[in-house]
Length: 107
Image 1 (spheres, rainbow, N blue to C red):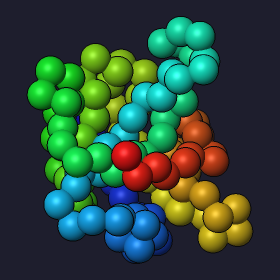
Image 2 (cartoon, one colour; image 1 turned 30 degrees about the horizontal axis):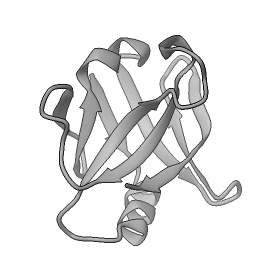
Image 3 (tube, one colour; image 1 turned 45 degrees about the vertical axis):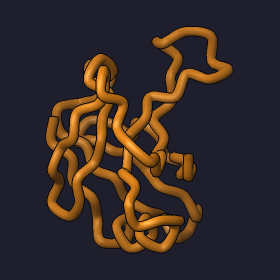
Image 4 (tube, rainbow, N blue to C red; image 1 turned 180 degrees about the vertical axis):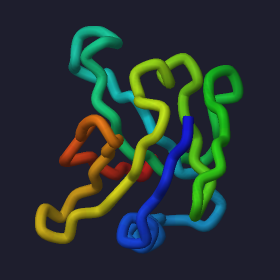
């Protein structure tokens, strides 16, 4: 899996981080969605990786954690962008928009 983070997204992520020692994570959030197939990609800023599930991937800008078992739900190449018009992060691939209104949560 290859992840690119645009400069607009990287700038916004740095502005939203509430601590220096955390990790950015692309989380397949299933809370309140019923089952794993109905997950929604979200960005989390977490204290530490989940040793059993997370892998740390390098991007063009910063490293990001991804849940290894959930990587099957993403395209091979994805881009994290930030839309100033929508005031939201977006997760895109060359084939589709995976989440046009992606949340950022400090956990």
